[in-house]
Each structure stands twice: as structure tokens, then as C-alpha cells.
Image 1 (cartoon, rainbow, N blue to C red):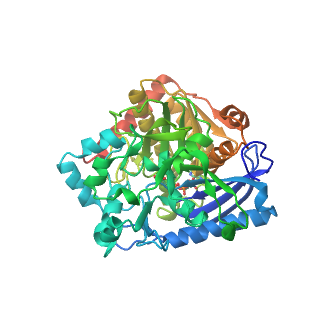
Image 2: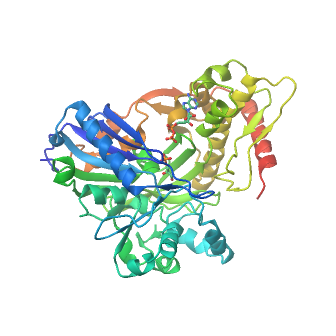
Length: 502
Ligand SMILES: Nc1ncnc2c1ncn2[C@@H]1O[C@H](COP(=O)(O)OP(=O)(O)O)[C@@H](O)[C@H]1O
Ligand SMILES: O=P(O)(O)OC[C@H](O)CO
């Protein structure tokens, strides 16, 4: 059986439940991908700024990719030592304890429907209380006001919740519940830390916050380590009992998958947006620079903390070049085009399409382009757009350095746009740091696989895992200090001219 001690199964399966698709990846011991299946699902936009998913569709797509990934390889259920789950974070699902049926669609992390409630909390200066307890900057992004909205707006929901009939979960919790046939209602520390209800210092659901949002404690899942056996898959579902043994929110899983185990280790995922996390060890650093304090991982009853900064638009700006501006045919073209000119010719693109994220948190800013001259051509424009991803990253790294009080000399990278060698070199240049890209850039799923493997004895230790992590390429800084300062000063000026609120 797939038990701790003498685990003989050959593979680990990671379920990566993201914002636009559900994926299942089967890894071997060295973290090589043996099978991967992915299914997109419907995005619902019922109102301006609202985003929802159907929890049943999340479950159905996750189930089917899980089955297909195994069947394609032709392996048996018992060849899988454990399952690790990693998920889009903050997204909120409420369901009936008896039937397992959701009472409403999942309210997605991107959904802004509770913006007015957030303004009210700020007006009461309750943001300070929230910040102190949860490490978060009060925002509709997190789960608390989403749960409150469901209880206030779904007919009968509040009464049912108070009678103990409803359960809340982020997507990890929903999948665990479904996979175990409704037997386990649990989440891990990293996901709990994104709800705006979890006290990251006492490591408990915070009673004062629960009262503030009028959320009965009976709705909440048990909070557990990111690496431990949560339960076993229901035989009906998977034709065998596989332990679910690793759980972490996707950005934290990526930090773990990048083997950023020590305080000071930083990773950046260059996807649609950029997500930067710095491990701060056992210190919950209270950011003075507009970053979030969050839980990096929970192992053996102890948590490590992280500083987090998110950039809303990164790879999305590259998509914009392709789909709206029609300047490129594919995202990969940007590398060749950027390298066809020696520099951006003084052009700066600030892709603040949906406002500016960390460290500015300016919801009202909008995209801008500076430095256009009669000599500006398409290549300069494309290059400036690619460079903006590096500048945005650099702003968050500067904030992290100030908060943590230590310089960042190395950054581990992943995500779709990390394939762009020009971007990686430019990042190294302006950051004056080494940029390290691993061979396996599926670090989110890999992190979940590592966590699951550790819990069942498939891996012995963090050191063993570190031994499997391999760099594909290291980009070293290669420009002068003067040049770096000039480039960064131009960006700072462009951002200042873009900002609306300070
Ligand atoms: N070679 C490239 N250069 C620059 N950007 C790229 C490149 N390849 C992909 N991208 C961008 O990366 C994003 C996709 O990365 P991915 O990690 O799959 O994102 P997500 O998980 O957020 O959907 C897209 O926005 C795309 O425009
Ligand atoms: O699904 P992703 O990769 O867009 O990640 C979403 C984040 O977890 C939101 O906090």
C-alpha cells in the first residue's frame, strides 16, 4: 500500500487547479513529467467586475484530467504513491454539508463584488486590525467578504450556516472533500492564510474576525500541515485508495517546488501576472512597503512565513501585443523582436491595465506609454513592453529588500514568460542579481508533488528533494551601474506619471 515507510510506488500525482484550467501531472521521483492533462472550464462574468466558476465543473474537469493522466501512462492506481493538491487561492465555495451541493457558484479571487464592503472597512480603520492579524492588505481579493456576501445574498444561507448545515472551503478544501467522498473537511496553513479570517500568528481561525464578518465557525475547515495525509481517495472515484498527502496554494507550492526552503530565497512566476514570494523563515515580516505577509508553508506543526508581491499584468501585456495591438504573431516572437534593436530608444510601457499592484496598490491607474519620438518603431515598442515585466518585478524586489533588510542576489523563475531569454537577461541586468531558471518550470505542480511525497516517505527529506532540483540556465548581470541607474530612473519617472493615487 501507499503507506509511509518503504513506499514502493513509482509516481506522484499533482492536481493543479488553476483559475482557467484544471491540470493533472504525474511526476517520477526526480521530478520529471511523465504525463500531463489539462482542461479549461467556463468563466462566468454575471456582472461588471464579477467572476465566478461552477464548483461542479471544477470538480468534473479535475476528475477527468486525473483519470486521463493515469490512463495515458497505462499505470495502475497503486503505482501512485500519493496525490498533492495545489490550487488557485482565495476562491470561495460554500456547500451543503449533507448533499455536498454548492449553494452558489465559486466566487473567484479576481471578483470585485465586495469592493463597497472593503471601502466601509477602511473607513472604520478596520484595515489595521485585519493587517495585524492576517498579514493581508484589506481587499475584495481575499475570501472573507466573499463568504459574507454568499451568506447575505443567497436566500436562506445565513440561517442554514447558523444551523451548521453549510461548509466553506477554498478550492483545495472542495477537492479534498470530493475526493474523499465527503469524509474530510480540511485545508492547509497556506490556503487558510489567504482567507482574511486566519490569524497567522496564533495559527487559529480568528474569533474576532469571524464575528466581524458574521461567519459561523462551524463552516470552517480544519487547518493542517501542507505535508501530511489528509485522507484517502474514495474507492468509487479512483478505483483505489490513494493518500491525499500534500496541499498548498499555488504560489506557495511554486516557492516550495523551486526549493526556496531557506529564509531569503525568492521566486518569481511570470504568468498572466507576476507573483513574487520571499521565504522569511520563522519571522512574519510586517511590510512597510505594500507587500503581503503570508504563510509560506506548514510542516510538522510549524509554519514559515513569506512576503508576497503581485503584479496584475505581466504576460497579459504580451498577449495584448498579440491580440489587441496585432504587433506580434506569438508571445515567443517578442524575444527576437526585442533583440533586433539595441534598446527601447527611451520608450517605457507601463501596463497598468487594471491598476497597479504591489508595491503601489493604485486601483485607478491605467496603462501608459512614454518617450515616443518620430524614431520609435515597432521593435522599440515590443521591447519596452517586454522590459516592463522586468521593471515591475524589480519594483517588488526592491520592496522586499527593504522589508527584509537584505539584498536579493539570486532569483528563481518560472511561468510562461520565463522562457524568454531576453527578458531573463534584462531582469538580471537591471536587478544586478543572478536569475536562475530550472529545467522543470512546472514548479507549482512539482511543489505539491514534493509535499505529498514527503508525507508518505516517497522522499526522505528536503535535502533529498534539493538534490533533484536542476538549473537549466543562469543569467548573470552584464551592464554597468550607470546604465542600470539610467534605465531604472526612466521607469520610476514613467510610473510616477502613471499613478493616480499615492
Ligand atoms: N516567450 C515568451 N515571452 C514573453 N511572454 C510569454 C512567452 N511565452 C508565454 N508568455 C506569456 O506568458 C503567459 C502564460 O504563462 P503561464 O505561466 O501559462 O500563465 P498563467 O498560468 O497565468 O495562465 C501569457 O500571458 C503569455 O503571453
Ligand atoms: O490560478 P493562477 O495561477 O492564476 O493563480 C491564482 C492565484 O493563486 C491567486 O492568488
